[in-house]
Length: 99
Image (cartoon, rainbow, N blue to C red; front, side, top):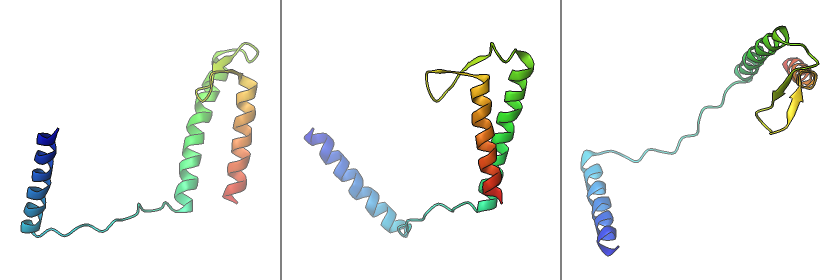
């Protein structure tokens, strides 16, 4: 292990000399740009629109009483009615947030 440690120290030393000779300065830590509220709202609406189009395809292709889909966020099964209730709550929340 001593040989590997000495190799790493030598590499770090040579790398620091190379960067100093190249004249590069250390970059200041930057924070990621924060999205604006209209951009966040639009992203939520776009995501929900995709979800509702998928839900409409599920409803067209099967009877509501027999439909059982596996929820990806948990291992339990949810009926179509439970999914639509969650979707309705999400839509109401988005409408309230948009105002």
